[in-house]
Length: 335
Image (cartoon, helix red, strand yellow):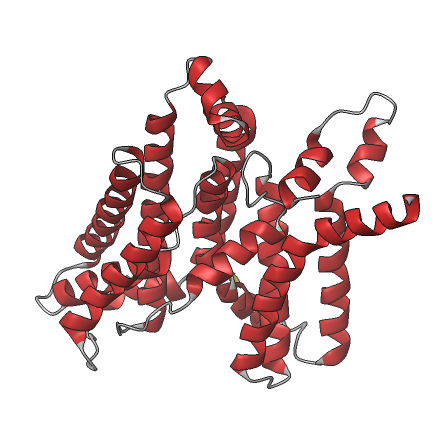
């Protein structure tokens, strides 16, 4: 069974089961149990894990990526994908760094970061919705294009000298250990949850992901919806670029390198079908927490970064392969 079939099966009402029974068997509940287990293991593995400030620092491991993952989840549910998100971050950060050299203020830098995100998202959207090109091919190309421009502008140099008030967007705290980025993460989680699960636009996204032809005959403007989703992904990449650049205080062309893999892993781990048509924002939120805790826990244990990359790659393959393995095991028992 494909991951799409496995995910859709969790959303099909079963009149022979109680509502509580379906909830207890949902993917989100399973992820919640895994998150609790990881939290307990990290607490036992390192005496520094439960320190409030350490836990606050741990949120930086996932908030910026998760904000992109919310928009990416909608895009993948609609049957498309954007692998250029890390390239957009690099280009937006480069544009902000260039403007900072001319003493642009924090407000101007934010507008530039968002503007680059919108332009890149629109560029991807036009190529996919107007020219009918496959999104995976288009965004692999623009992934290299956007980051390549950053390398041309910067070379082996770095942009520094950002205004002091700009740092708040990446390192500021709203209350005690509650960072500004964590507030943004929670805010966008709520916004995208409402968009996907409580609006007509969200229902259109599910319909397009399940059958774009049927959605067209149902009166849904498929190209327009997909264009909006590419724009949202670009905007969220721009916001992530603002937060990441403010947190680092500098821009290099390698910024956010390979983030597209982690964002897609976060979305798929959250139960979103890689083939479209199924998924939830709650699952993505829990998946973000899991990946953040795993990364932070391994960091406290001084595990090399390459091991973390291996873990993320293995996790992505495992999540995609799991439904297929379950089906094969059930078929074997039946046979």
